[in-house]
Length: 340
Image (cartoon, rainbow, N blue to C red):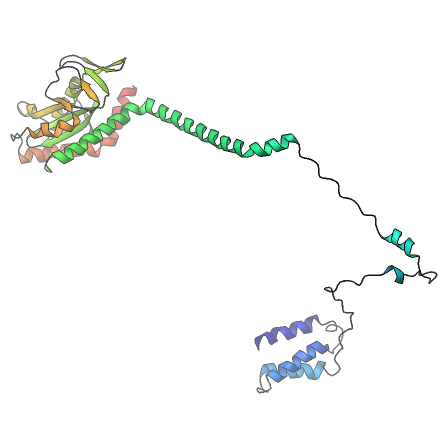
């Protein structure tokens, strides 16, 4: 057995007489003899020969195991009676009354438990309530902080966020209402004749015309006129003036004509459209090209007379795709012109 190969040498190593005498202990010799019996059917094996050699050399006079008192720790100690105690000096019985008084310690009465103080009782009763209101207060503070952060974000980027939401709504309308042959571009940054840059919200390229769309997401009453430089937005008692979006989009259409090289009658095929969100309410006679976002698709579909050839459409598409590819760099230049 394999465990015999390691057990026997360890017993031999830690035997109390291993380093001082030649003879092994009785326990070691018994293990060696047991190993010889285990491998007796293989007298030529290493295990048998090694055990036999050790028995012959070191087990002729094995060292007996030392005698030790057996200590039974699990048996309770025998109680000593007072009557059996004797005086070691006089060898006489000891007075029972004296031993009892001297050996038996007096019983100590436990101290009475202190009565709880009223303040501790109230504290224990109101602890769950205080913990609950503390958690509620923490949640209110966190909610207030989130509202403040949201208000700051909306105050700074509110107009941009609202415009992006309405532009996305217009994109869904155009995808749904227009044919797949119409090419749609969003947020194109293109150069103008003056050398600066302008950003077009939406542009639709088709054989029936090029449609440049300016998106406004205002909430309230809108006052203005086609030729007025400023329009007014009123919401409750608050009034706000903004640039006439038709004049604003005129700059966009001129930049598109220059980018695509359109002049003469071909330039008249670039149409300007201003789209408002559904929360705006017009308080004046609006021009035909000013409408709600949901009606832009129907308005574009009213143009059905071809005005551009397939070759021109491919050329226009290539130039617009170049502007789209460089949109990030051009937008950076576009933003720098406002910081100058």
